[in-house]
Amino acid sequence: MFISGLTTLLIRYGYYYGYGGTRAGGGNYGLYILIFLAMMILPIIAQINVSSTFKKYSRVGNSRGLTADQVARMILDSNGLHHIQIEHIKGNLTDHFDPRTNIVRLSDSVYGKSSVAAIGVAAHECGHACQHAENYAPIIWRSKLVPVTNLCSHLWYLVLIIGVALSSLTIGTSLIYVSIAMFFAVVVFQLVTLPCEFNASNRALRTLERDGILEMNEIPQAKKVLKAAALTYVTSLVVSLLQLLRLLMSVRRR
Image 1 (cartoon, rainbow, N blue to C red):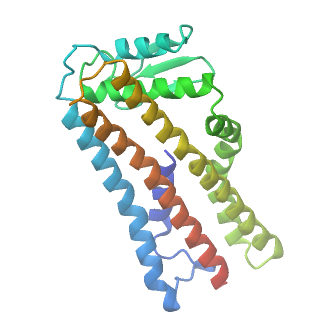
Image 2: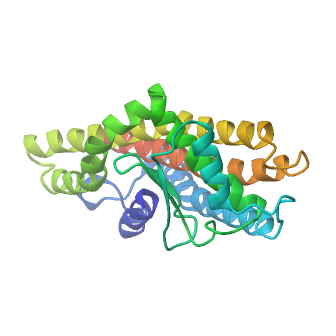
Image 3: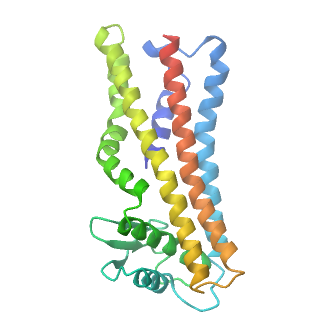
């Protein structure tokens, strides 16, 4: 959702992101264009990659005939997490673990499916449940950052717009710097998210192999699905860093 909102904002302002309505000029104009194009193209590539990879391995059933929800229950129980429930939710790859309600939610494309891809995703979400149960440091930090990040991700560009409109005044410049600080908070959140996602995937693959849930030839296939999903988080961070660079370049140009 963050990438979608960011893309909308970029389209709205296009290449004319300079303060006071002036176009980014001088020697930096080419760099502005490259950054803008990278921010537009990278998320599309990442989304196509994860969609095509998941679709490919959704056609590959696991040899034991287990469904993703059954595997999720097995993993949770084997880790002593009998109290965590599993629910079916609508959508495609909207799977997640909700630590507030202790529920692993599996989407239409995963719940009840016996594909290698679905089982990999379900195991990944159980990995997050295990992280919370073990007080895995990055997931705790991430949880604490959620309220601040939600606020900053929704308001930073509004503060920026107001700052640009009032840029002739001292308060306008201050607001511009506040907006950059708010966006930096979003970048920090995304940075903390990466180890959580990679660790959950590694936990999932180890469990699927150790418990014999997937055959040895099926593990690499599940790994490809989880790797493609992880790359979307990497891409999100890269795009945010590019946007942060663009903001700092604009401030410096002023």
